Image (cartoon, rainbow, N blue to C red; front, side, top):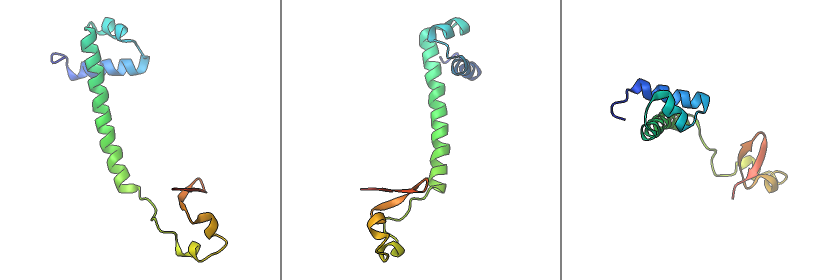
Length: 100
């Protein structure tokens, strides 16, 4: 695989991703061995994963903040709300859920 250009690696992966071609079909199409094809596809998948992980990880750390663990004072002091929301951590689509 060291003799295979980055362009050819990417082309192989894109062809695989677009058509869903089998390893054998990729071997025939690009005239490479099974080992070369498999290493090539895995290499590109790993690169995409690394880039995606960096982008999503930094986005998540910067923009996603969990709510505090403490029950808000407004709920603690309201006898009507407290029994229903004392163990609630947050809301998904407007409905609270227990987190224990």
